[in-house]
Amino acid sequence: MLQSIITYFFGSKPDDFNQAADTSPFEPCPDSPNCTFDSVEFNEKAEDLFEIVSSAINRIEPYEINTNSQSLQIDAVFRIPIFGFKDDVEIAVKPVDHEKSILHIKSSSRVGESDLGVNRRRIKRILTTIKQQIS
Image (cartoon, rainbow, N blue to C red; front, side):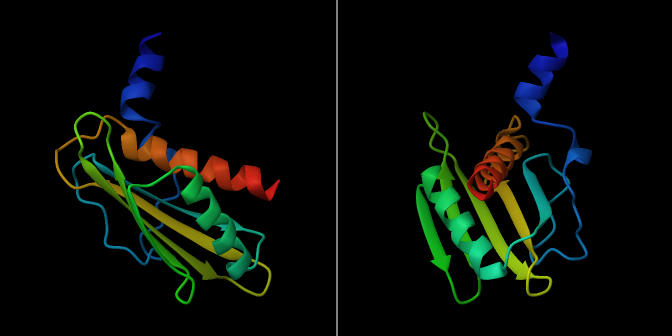
């Protein structure tokens, strides 16, 4: 029971995401626990994966979104209900070869020391939506 409560408020363990900082196109997360990123390889062409990711992000209804199909990047802002805090989500799709690509995704709070696991859960939700669309 206690583990369920902790997981809900703080998200999953930090080691459940592939935090390959050396390949990420984003600035590293600060030491505070209000930022999460992941890099996931998919057996999809970069352009195809980008379209899937774009659709998945729109399903989650960001407050603001800027999609750049030329650079295969998305910048979105999510607003926390009630308090109105804004979180930034950065996404980049990079080709590995003609049939594979890597999705880099970062979610970070603009204010506060802790996000109570909101960014970690957001990334999990986006990845789950993407994987559902691919299946």
